[in-house]
Length: 115
Image (cartoon, rainbow, N blue to C red; front, side):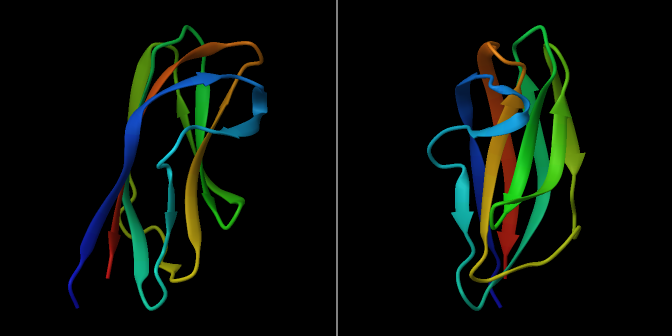
């Protein structure tokens, strides 16, 4: 079976609503897994231009599955090879939590492979 790579990525402005509130980040950070396919996350990379911690969440069908904290003016790279199989019909989405009132820019890059 042929593998297909998908990347949920971009440079996105954000405004925080609190570290427990995961807000949508921007257009293009949602991926519906096609029926009959299996999707796996390969890696997550992220950057944060603010002076405070932010957290990016990977949701599967609306439920938080992984958290990626990104320190103040810092970046993170998390290898995720074969953490879990995501079956067709599922929806993956990235959302962001930041302290209330904090605004800034996040660099987001999630690599996925489907087969």
